[in-house]
Amino acid sequence: MTVPSMTADTAVQNKPGNNSAQPSAAELEVILKGVMNSAYGAGHYDASRKCWKHSFQSGQDSLDYCMVGTVSSVVTTKSGSTVYVQAHSDPEAEIYSQVDPGLEGLFVADMDANQNLKLRASRSAIDKGQAGDCGCLDARVVQVGPDRYGWLSTTGGLWQGVQVTRYSLEVPMGEEIRDVSAMPQVSERSPDETSELKIKTDSGATAGMYPLELVRKRGGKVFDTRLVHYEEAERSYPWAP
Image 1 (tube, rainbow, N blue to C red):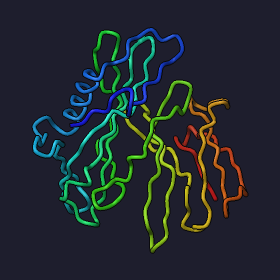
Image 2: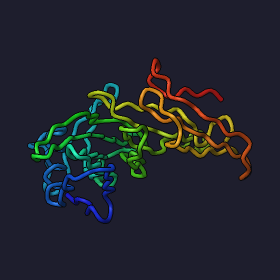
Image 3: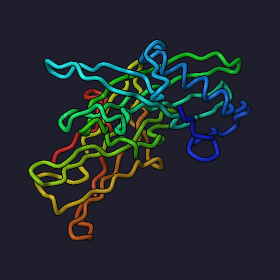
Image 4: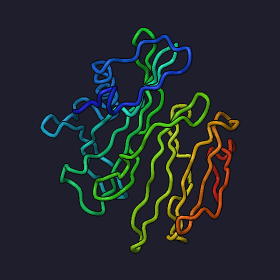
């Protein structure tokens, strides 16, 4: 199990006025192992492959996966630290068929000033991608509200030879983690168009969520810029072409 160093791969964010010590690399390793054991079972750790074995029900089939984890980010405040952990199926495990989706797991754990850890939100198996590869390793933790963070990535694939992708914004809400975005990056309807998503942290928040700006381009030229506000009733950012 490889744990990213805080100075290299793990983003450590400090809120203004923070006096709390950041978790050390050793503490992050303990946190990561604890989260993965809680999600997939300590007895399911495969030392030979350095991953956690996980069985996922897809339709009538039960598929076997090999899950690895990493600490995406640590947000530290005066009251303690929040650790964002991402798990994903190991595409190098060589146990998947071409039609098997990949799996992504997302977890948020709070650690108080006394180093007590509590899992706040979790989602252990989100199916996406293909051939056991979730295609989600570009996910990064971003600020989506004054006191809220989430994972931003792209998801999709080839459909009849056309690349179709959208922006995924997976945000902790209570004990669940919810994908609140349907914003396209490359649309099946218009494969010659691309969109760039920006989180407008300089704008007012709605229900604790900043608006999203989608800049749409055709042939490299901007033809539409749209500001989309979070809809609390729908618990998402609605999108209509």
